Image 1 (spheres, rainbow, N blue to C red):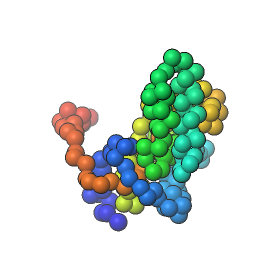
Image 2: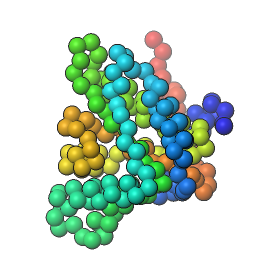
Image 3: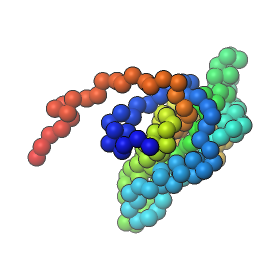
Image 4: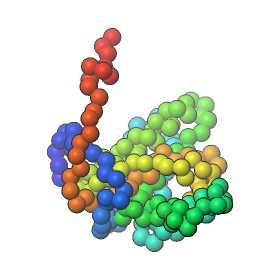
Length: 187
């Protein structure tokens, strides 16, 4: 297991199509989800949930995404439809983080949304801590209500992100990060 600080300093997203199998085992998936759920959660609301797309479920979900795409773009070509069908097969495992933030008498919705974002980041960090790699993306279907309904989301739920998980063939190059002088002020 990598040193925590080194992991946090070196984590780098990997394109879904560059993630290889085999995927995490069921025990590893349970570990990932347990860690993902250990986030600040004012009011203990658990304003998030997870959808696991593993094995053939990735293709089945892709068919639902493609059906929504065709509904939006009836003139789509066969190649475009195939791209949509394969959205969740690009990586060996995909886990959707779903925000179920809702009005609450004490807990602002914004705090609930932030908690869901923290769950997604914990999931991604845990992915690297277990020796895998991943990326957190949304893409168009994260905002399309027809696609979301087909993936099992309720009308008030939103996708925080689809975390694509797998193994890497080579370590990705880092990208430029903002200089602290440009993003930090002191009061």
